[in-house]
Amino acid sequence: MRHHWAKTDLYLTCTLGPYNEHFMTEVMKELVTMYRVDGFNHNRWNPQLMCYCGYCRTAFRKASGLDLPRKEDPSDPSWAKYLIWREDRIFELWDHWNAEIRKINPNAFVLPGLGGIRTKANMSKVRNRAKTLYIDHQGRAGSTAPWTPGLEAKELRSVLGKKPIGITFSMGHTEKWRWKDSRQTDAELRIWVCDGVANGLRPKVAKFGGIVYDDRWLDVVADMYEWQWKHESYLRNEGFPVANVGIVHSQQTPRFYTAAAGRGHSCSDYVDGLYHALIEARIPTDMVHEDLLAEGELDRFRALILPNAACLSGKQCEQIRQYVKRGGSLIATFESSLYDEWGKRRGNFGLADLFGVSASGPVQGPMKNSYLRPVYAKPEPHPMLDGIRNTRRIINGVYRQPVAAEAEFPEQPLMLIAPYPDLPMEEVYPRDLDKNVPELYLRQLGDSRIVYFPFDIGRTNWEVLDIDHGRLIRNAVRWAVDNDLPVEVDGPGVIDVTVWRQKQSMTVHLVNLTNPMMMKGPFRETFPVGEQRIRVRLPKGAKPKRAHLLTAGTELAVEVSGGWLSARVPSVDVHEVLAIDL
Image 1: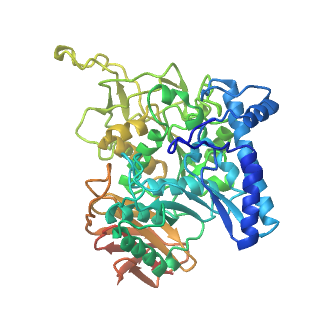
Image 2 (image 1 turned 60 degrees about the vertical axis):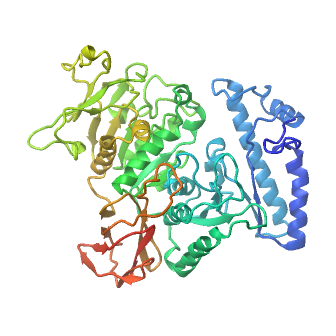
Image 3 (image 1 turned 30 degrees about the vertical axis):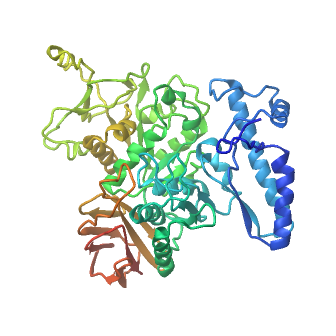
């Protein structure tokens, strides 16, 4: 038996056994009969801890012929079988609950809680079951970035598609010390909720207990909900955001890519560093789940990004291959596709034919004092070096996958400067400048452009936040889409940009992340940024009849030319929306 972690005189019930299947089913049936409720939110629906109760031991042995694994070890064959069994069981329970309550109220449904489930259960199986989902991420803790709700919105949308999605937020601190009756600052509450709303999330406020000890959060929460009510018609987004750059959302990699854990890294670092660079570059993105890479899911994107999506199945690799054959571009980093869906290392990349290189040895690193040497071709340097001038070196990543070229690469704008001693001072000089080893591979396959970084650029960017790495990521995306982006926003500050369509309008959301507490909250106050110059592509055949700012409440003069609308937003405090009536 396991003690409850917060109140140790209590015990945890087994999530998978008869308590949920029988007792909780009867509780829900009684409630839906007496009160005709619309549904039930199951908190901690997915097991957070291994369970060794009699039910789990017996049921797992019956399903697999094995004993329960003693620890989370992806190299243990029983661990993979356990994950499949546990996953099948929680979805079996969900189906059972829905079936029983719908016998009483056909419109009722179960809404499972989504805490850490995004890496513990295959979310692609959720799409046909869930009417809506809310991510339970109530606020920032530690060094969580303020753009996190937007990223999680994209992850959730990659599963649910066009169904409504939301986020549960709290007025209190969310650090591990669990101050549930505390209050965050107004600025912190606003940035967290607004970035979620801008990226399509519907906010749900959570309050532990029925007594309000601190009245200071009431007005800001009421004000945010009033803003949404006032502008509801411009928040009824249709379909997906207007973005032609997609990021593959991999769950297999966090589950089975043991190499990252062995190096002391989180798999989320590879995504976060890349995503942060795209926020700074103001490039709108969306995500697509690794199990949903069919033609209809991918073809809204002009370019697809694999942020060290190390674990990909043969089927998934083939779907990406077909996407490229249809003209889509691809950006991949480090060990993407070098492992199968169970974390077993392949002899070569699953997408080696697209990358044009083969893996030629074990991963090198951690590397100290290694660099990249820009190659400035004449008369004009390659666009990958845009913004990187007057230097003979920029920093490399920390880990790299050695590769051998299997195709022709006529343009090679970055070369490796291998690690060399950083002390003693007399030894601090490079040894092998006569070797030309590319550290960036670019090729064109028909209408498709392929970018492959053999090093951990996303993870290193998240650790170091080097401006040149951010520029390389930005330039890779711009080159891959041939500078064809649906919106351009120029101006000061760090701005999260999202574009949506509604039935009779389109909106450009600008969330101002500029703050000295951006990378370690909470915000104390907001810092408005100055004029933002927007150029956005209008829907084909559409003409604007009005443009105005939702937060400022002012009309805007615009220019329209060649299917593009240009406007100037005087300033952005937290969240401004350019609304264009069509």
